Image (cartoon, rainbow, N blue to C red; front, side):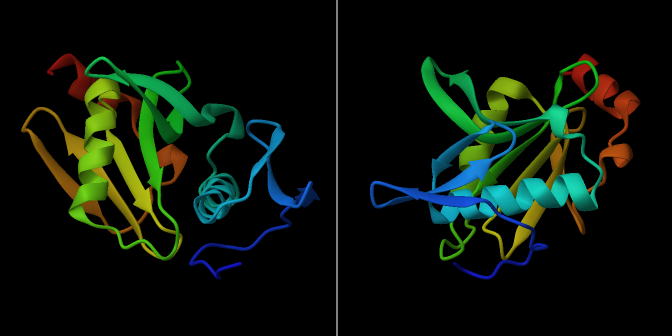
Length: 161
């Protein structure tokens, strides 16, 4: 599979009926192997092993409602109170990250109002910090560690929306 700009790890792959599957430890099951799933599994592993995100605070394929329609966030990370902290949208490595991808994750964020948005195709990763007080966003140079995401900042932003 495609080399990514993420740490490698011991991936569990299986094949059944001519179809390939990759094990998702968060969902505790084998899921269809796709280029996007390849990125997701590597990125989640990166968050857990390199950025100290607790695996029990991460969920894949989270159902939400946006303007009366059901959508699924690729990954959502929660705080200790199970309030959403960030949404991650993945694309296959051959998909260029464009404004359309940011528009997609922004639509999802209209339902969750998280302080951080991340978009990755496994090669390029972008993280935005949302400032709901001033109605701005700013791109960060790096993906923040779990401990860098301050509870006070999150509460402050949500109270003033």
